[in-house]
Amino acid sequence: MSISEANMTEKEIEKIAKAYSKELSSTFYYTIFLIIIVISFNLYYTEQGFYKLVFNLPVVLICLFQFKKIKLLFFDNIQKDFEQKRKIIITLIVSKKNDGHQHFDGLNSSDNIEFEKNKYFRSLDVSNSFYHFISVGDEINFELSKHGKWLIAVHSKSKNINYNNYSHRKSQL
Image 1 (cartoon, rainbow, N blue to C red):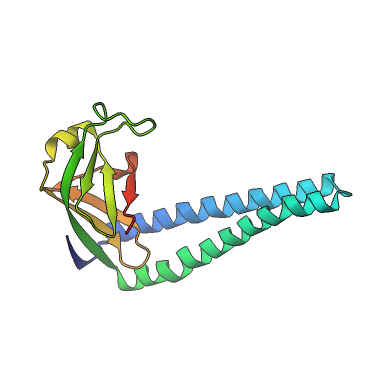
Image 2 (tube, helix red, strand yellow; image 1 turned 30 degrees about the vertical axis):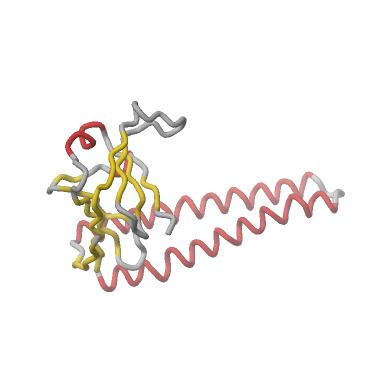
């Protein structure tokens, strides 16, 4: 495993801006939806004091968490990413390949690759064609924005991995 830093291109900065915008929009609309539910519930049930508290408390806590998420994830880190225009490149080594059809484990039956023990990524679900392209011992490069840790690209042997269609699991370290 190795970690290095590099400058981001304008295209990568634009990609991060779109990802931030998408996440901010979904968080904002989710919060608005929760607020509308709370207001509707309170207008409909005007007399049930204890039940209103039981219903409102978790929803209000979720809304507060969403507002905190907006502040922590977006305003501090996105400014630093846009100002510094730096990315980190994490190079991990494939330690194991799992054929999804041979190791069917319920909901996740896709092909995946596992990495040597590290604190960043444990495994990555990949397409069947990439599964056959990669070998144990090969290096996979993850490019992330330096402060926001938004995934910019994943590639190996100069071949990009389309990570949008596949999930990745963070390491438990």
